[in-house]
Image (cartoon, rainbow, N blue to C red):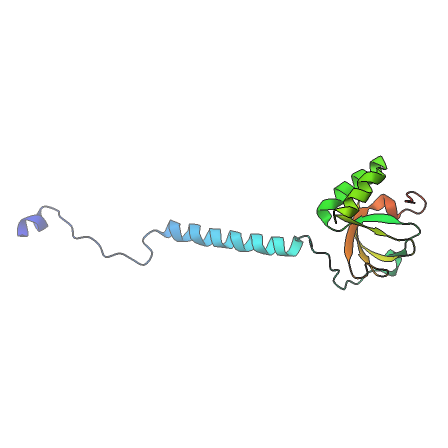
Length: 150
């Protein structure tokens, strides 16, 4: 037995709590990255529901519509509404309404413009049969006298 000890045989070291410090650093970095992404998406996330939360809006951003217009019920459908307006495709507009992707807002509906981004306006409906809902439409629709659906 003495022979092994004299020939350089070493007893194995007991494991330390952190035997690989780079593994701990990588794990902590990954957790920090995931946390940072969660916070980022929480703060910048798009609202996908229809219910309009109470939002403080400037009085200049509240309007009463001077015409009937089409409004997408989800942000993802706003491009379809914009395309239908661009081609003035009444059949497409009616199809979007029948499939539940858009609604018609009647003339005289009070709306609050919450946000304008890349040609799409986010509005909160404040009167009429769709009161309390949020929808999305092309900004050009909000210009008086430009678009008018019969």
